[in-house]
Image (cartoon, rainbow, N blue to C red; front, side):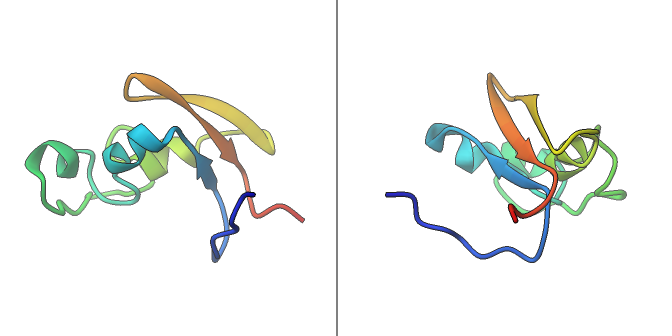
Length: 79
């Protein structure tokens, strides 16, 4: 059974459980290696945050490269 987690909108990211701790979200990707929150200057910049990378998709659903894996990105909450 899949448990739905609430969201305020997309993009929604589906990634392997082993990669969850490596997802920086809207914070700088430096946050992961620094093991603390580092605020991104521009969280929509795909070079600065994982959220920015996810926002670059052009279709409703796409696969992006993430860390040493792949992540599925849904452009918005499923209807």
